[in-house]
Structures are given as C-alpha cells and as structure tokens.
Image (cartoon, rainbow, N blue to C red; front, top):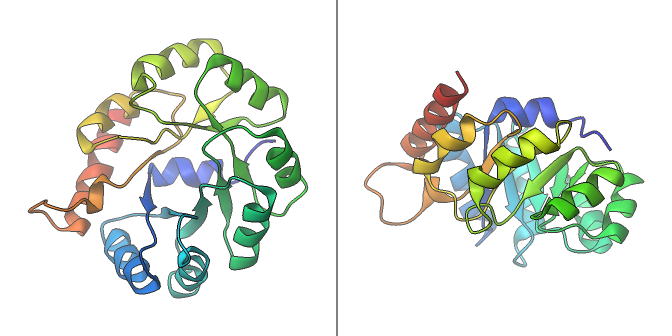
Length: 208
C-alpha cells in the first residue's frame, strides 16, 4: 500500500520518537520540538499515558502530523485510530496486523531489517517501511545497498540514531525521514528546540 502521508513525512525529514511518560510531558515536549521546526512526531504505545497523550497532542497541536509507534497488534492499531493518530508504525512485519491496517483509515508503516522482510512487506503492498533498529542493523551501509536493489521502496530508519549520523542518512535517496529521541536526551547543554533545529539543518544540508 502506498503511504499517502509519505510526502509530508519526507518534508518533515525528522520524526522525533516520544516516550509518553505523562500527558503533560508529551505536550511540553511537543511544544518545544515544534518551536524547533518539527512537523511530525511519533508517540510510542509503551505506557498507559500513550493514548491520552496522543489525543491531547492532536488537539493542542493540529498542525503537527502525529503518529502512533510500537503498533504490535490489530488492537493497538484500532486504539491508535480511535485516539486520533494519523499514521501508525510497527517495529516489525506482522502479516495479520498489516492486513488489518490495509482495511483501516490510517496508513501503517511496517518494520523491516532484512532483505527478505523488505521483499515480504513490498509484496504485501507497503512501499514505505521502517528500518529498525537502524544502527545495530548496519544503518546507512545496509540502506545504501537497499537503494540499489529495492528501487521503489523508501525507509524511515530509527534505532540508536544520533545527530552525528544524520548527514549519512540525508545523503541516501531512499530515506523518507529519520526517527529518534536524541533531540531531548538528558544531559545536553542545548535546549530541545535548538537540538531539533540543528538536526533539521544537518539532514537538509545533506539532502542538498
């Protein structure tokens, strides 16, 4: 299935992955990320606050493209839809979940790591895929090879990616956007807004 949101995700370039500690945490973080230029975020379904945070984020920031991450089951997909998610992302390729999503109202981006998984997801109709976990799986080295083999597939890599990796990802034509949480990692002297802005500048400079 061609993801109709791909042009918006490509324009966004970076999709911060938000761990929903609480609704207030997500809203505060989303505000700072948006001030730094973020156009899309992914809220992962890994806490009891996730669905409420997603719903609140959609209401507070209607200009943001808000997705639900860690979609593991069809029930997760349905819950994300009901909370207002505009897209879903799965860490792996589960044929039953993907088939369910193809009948649903929002696109799902299935996760892949190997060439066989890319082929299976592509055969199922998914041209936009999540490459995860990106850095442990070979990062730009593997994705550069995939660009030559799977010419009609594009990827949203995430997993252990840092700001220093963005230039490499930005140079690859098969990268729609890059996901991660480095822009709000603890211990940085820079503000979240500044880290987000710097990250966007780095990947857009690499794209040319």
